[in-house]
Image 1 (cartoon, rainbow, N blue to C red):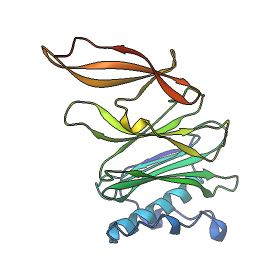
Image 2 (image 1 turned 30 degrees about the horizontal axis):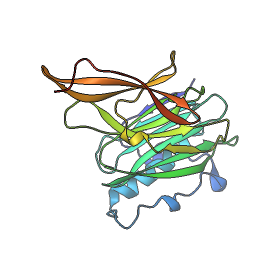
Image 3 (image 1 turned 120 degrees about the vertical axis):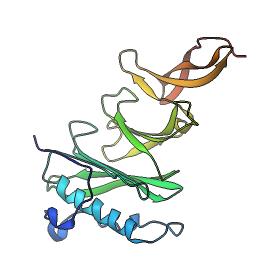
Length: 230
């Protein structure tokens, strides 16, 4: 299996374009909006995305995470969402207050075709991306972790569900996930477990709340707290 992990700046001459004139879809519709400073760093980032898409067509798995803050870029390709279709998930800054998630399908000719694009509120200066099965349908979903909250150890972010029973080319934003902390799937029990800060007499601690899916909605099932609130 050809697996490539990149964490260093890319040079255009490293990779040869494999799709020719009929290759990867142009990124014109991904140009940052008017609130984004048009400087060389954004130009280089979009060039990097194009290079990664070309490279993804000839390797089984490819991963890249930028080491700088603005603009930030996450790229991962392969059979990363399910075993039927080869995809590329691209998450990147469009400004210091917004980021974008693009889903590409790497088709039979090895070329990347953009399937859908979702813009998310920021901050766009720091994020992480987790791929896991959050709705227990056998396919992985995308959780964009935005930030830690004031040193409490909890995280919040945006959950984008990949639902192959509906479509192989769409990520759907789950609207309530941006208020959820430490989103962890328990696959054996098919519940999502989250943490929320609570102040006990002895100091701060965390309540664990369990949610289960009911008709594509998350319903709270159980709450366990180590102490009573002050």
